[in-house]
Length: 175
Image (cartoon, rainbow, N blue to C red; front, side, top):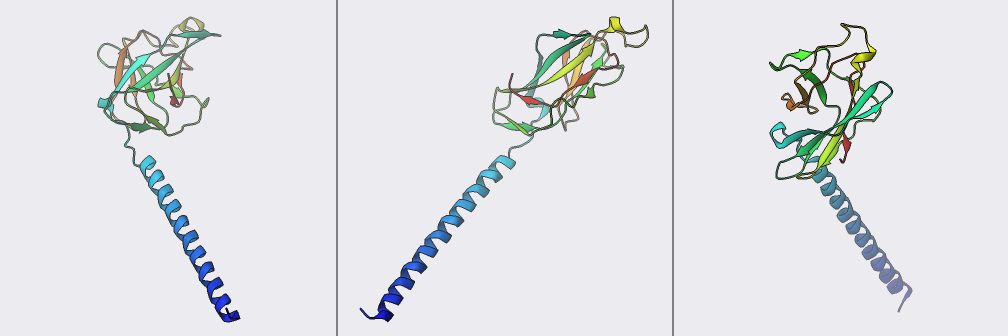
C-alpha cells in the first residue's frame, strides 16, 4: 500500500472514530436532557391530593415541637418546595394571633413526593405559661396549614395557643 493509501485509511478511521464520539455525546446529552426535563415536569401538589396529620409533640426548653406531615394521596408523584404557612384558628375559622414565623433551621429544597409518601415541617409552639397574660391568643380549635404555593388550607383539629415564637420550618423529606 502506498503512503497515500495509508494516509487515506488512517484519515477514514479517525473520521469514523470522531463520528462515533459525537454520536455518543449527542445520545448522552439528549438522555440527560430528557432526565432533567422529566424531573422538572413533575407537577406541583394540589391541595385536594394532600392530607395533613400531626406527629407526637416533643418538649424542649419552653417550646413544644411537632411534625406536620403532608401526605400525597394523588395517583402520581407531585412536588413541593418551601415553607408551609401555619395558623391557629377557632371554631369559626378566625385566625388567632399571628401565623407561624419561618424558621431558617432548614433551607427549602424541591421535594418529589410519591403516592402515599409524606414530607414534613417542624412547628414550634412556645409554652403559653411562660408569657404574661394577653401575650398569647385564646386556645385554638384547629391548625390550618397552607402548603407552599397553594391558596387553600388543610385543617387538623388541634388545641394550642399562638404565642410569640410560634414557628415553622421548610418542608423536609420523610416521616
